[in-house]
Amino acid sequence: MGYPRLGGEGGRGGDVWFVAHERTTLKSIKDRYPQKRFVAGTGANSRFPNAGKSSLLSKVSHAKPQIADYAFTTIKPELGKIMYADYKQISVADLPGLIEGAHANKGMGHKFLKHIERTKQLLLVVDISGFQLSVKTRFRTAFETILLLTKELELYKEELLTKPALLAINKMDLPSSKDNLNELMKQLQNPQDFLHLLQEDVIPESTIKFKDVIPVSTYTGEGIEELKTCIRKSLDEEAEKENEDYRKKKLLLLRTSEEKQMNKG
Image (cartoon, rainbow, N blue to C red; front, side):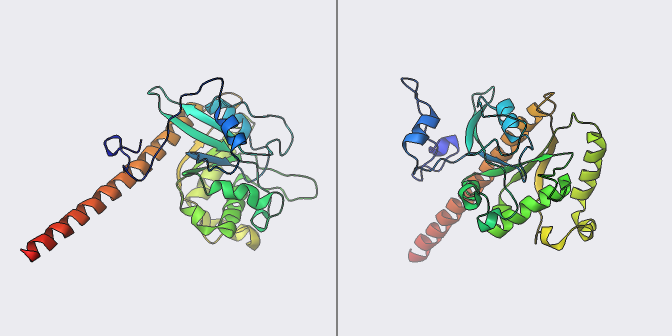
């Protein structure tokens, strides 16, 4: 895809296509060359464990991550590919859930946050019913969860908040999920109106602007196809924007060159 006629920027590199032989997989290559950089189209990350990231990855791709109903089942990034009818493929990375203080290297901290830098866009996965890790920790609503994740990303590297971002609201099959979703949407539309209700250390300097908010249920399959469509649409829009910026830059250089030639003449 490095060819300009295919939307790339020839000479500057691009996607590399492999034809696998003898049961070679992307995972086996990654394990063999751990220092090589693998860039995912979308990075799925939840603020807390048990938001359903691994289940979601298994629904949108052919990946088979470990899934269980206890916290932190994902202990390393899991890679999958979303396959589309026109043969387009998008890599997805399921990143282990963060804990508060990950930016300061609590938990596995930087070990996982660095993977977020490599993704082209973010996909936050949040449990609509909220989350409480243990009786000793505070209960966090879905809105607080989103703000806490934003805070951790901001404290680690503020530029991460400029990445295109989608929000998947999971577990819409649970009781009261529709009411909770309505409340969350109000909070997301006008977050400043609700910040005074929260602890100061939870509130980020800026909030993430989500391109799409997609309610899903990995249990019933609700919203899964819509989510796949949104992921594809978002990445295509960003690629077109990059190509347009590149075309404008090339055109400007061409015009500048022509003007210099005319001035010499």
